[in-house]
Amino acid sequence: GLNIATGDVDGDGQVDLIAGTRGGNGTTNGRREIGRLAVIDGGSAAGANDLIGAIVTPFGPEYEKGVVVAAGDVDNDASDEIGVTRGG
Image (cartoon, rainbow, N blue to C red; front, top):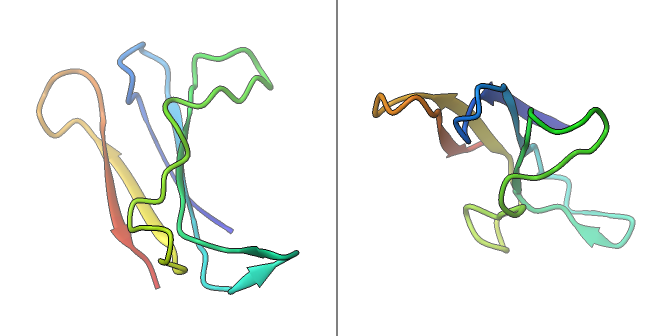
């Protein structure tokens, strides 16, 4: 599963999708499920799924629980910042 938030993180006037993995299930298909975060550009062509930046592991590669995300313009610069916290 995913934890989802939306916001204009790149300041282009389009709503971007912020996704954090729920994690916590150990291994699936031989891959460890670790807490990851990705931002998908809302200004991309339909189906392009362009990432803004890289998929990151905000709490390190050993963290196997969820990543909860939020977005908001905390510094009043017309671009939303991403808030991240550990999930259960």
